[in-house]
Length: 117
Length: 113
Image 1: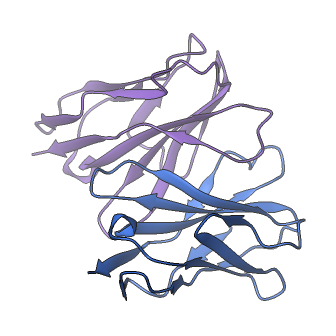
Image 2: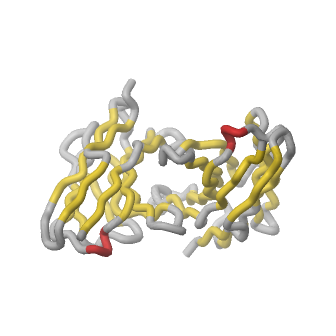
């Protein structure tokens, strides 16, 4: 079974600075998807960024980028120019690319990010 | 588009009561799922459906039933509520042809006393 580990329960960053959230995962599969979701106090789950395992290039979405290390099974999220609105719980998630197992999103326990003004 | 909607937003039940959490989507998505989120944990899959009339169990299915008679609706039934089912419940949907993005509803906070 796949597992996702987020080793930082809480992180803080100064506004306008850069922060990196860590995520490692365990799988025996070769094809899968990785995601970072943001959950603000409103409780809504918002997709921040996604990465296909077969792509070597790291995904980027505006101020958000990932460092995907497939061999190390590592998938960290970098937030540049942090803003107060970035404060939230961040979840790393894994999904198999194979039929049959593809509906299960496996989540880490989350990292609570605080942004200090 | 309203996206994924869930009702109610909050609910308090007594142990042994039954109820149905409603989920609807207006994006014509084939796949729909139910997750629960407990404190200090990420979301865990309860049940999912890959189309009308087709459902399957996820990671934590015990105590819950689902059915899917239409593409739009995917209700989650609690048969006999237990305090261990106190949680926040999320419904999600996606297109079968989309490899990645799931759209989540706003969640239902359920308390069982």
